[in-house]
Length: 496
Image (tube, helix red, strand yellow):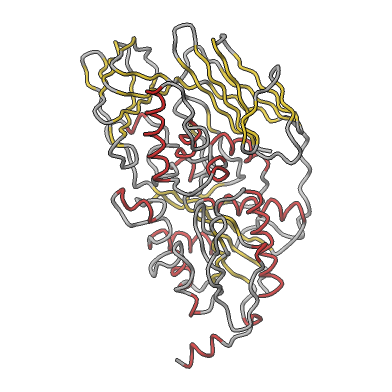
């Protein structure tokens, strides 16, 4: 008891100058806590496991702080520090449903708070999920501002470095809403939306938009980081029988983030679009583990997560120890990186085939097609039944991957996604407040192009739209029909 009382009375100056800072991810909350022994059980749901990453780091001799993270409009929870100890101001609290660069700025200010109030001049960042993206943004902003403290290393757990396939699927349903006139399409859209909402329950449009592969393809090149990044992935969710047909961006996964994205590797989308690597100078793979992203996904069959698994904790401890011997990620002595030339952002994404079937068949093309089947629906390639498996544990929607050169027979309600054989594309360029949009390839009938600016959709005039001041990320959507009657949709997310 005496030891605990003495610990509680320690002044902030008693802490060492080097520490590990834990950053939880999207739709999470964690209070500000210090390395005091009494704070070990008060770190919030992400880091409180007695056998998880935080506990392993402490047992390994590391000083551990947790960054304050809150859901939009909520509180991170009661801080844990010595009586009279400094507490970070509200401006240092990360909004787990908010903008990635705003959260990067909040994290940067929090690290400066630790430097000023707790004498922490050297930090090793450990980010779970979006916490890894916010950490990369903070490092970039610290390098540009030539400000401290020194960031010695970065380790990420299930971070969607190139995007989350769930967020990409959410793009299909227009920022979380189904706006389709055809009743069958609307029904399918609502069914998919329920699956998405089961995983992305309270994220909000900003968080979902900025988790997409198209947003991160334009955000990643803007980041600068001066050190290797250690990465870990969860792989509990694997698609049986047809999984080998899916890119590693989707399979295996932790239920939200695919292995390729978590390990910061290039991949491809279901439509065959390249998903580029994030451009981190050097990536250190510390392992893939049979766990899910968070405890919210325990319905998939396991309670082991990226932050409570002992093996992952040991891998993180090793990464932090090794990172202490390398050149830092950011340091006041580095100075600002060379400014990037002002260039237009160009995004090209082939159209996805948005074919809806209800008791209808068609000729196969031999291209890979991903099919979402509602309850009772089935697919046959010629005489062969196409196997389908539940989508993220859903009882209403199953997914199948099809390569069929024979007649594709559809029974019931089925949504088909695949590559457009005529390779049409959506080309978007942005320079300052001017956005230009055009559709490349063979013409479509009834083509509609809309741009989502803040909370409303607008129609470009002659392919050009002038954005209001302060506009951040925008969504561009094109919908049209080709001569055969096939409906096609393309979506692009363009970062500021």
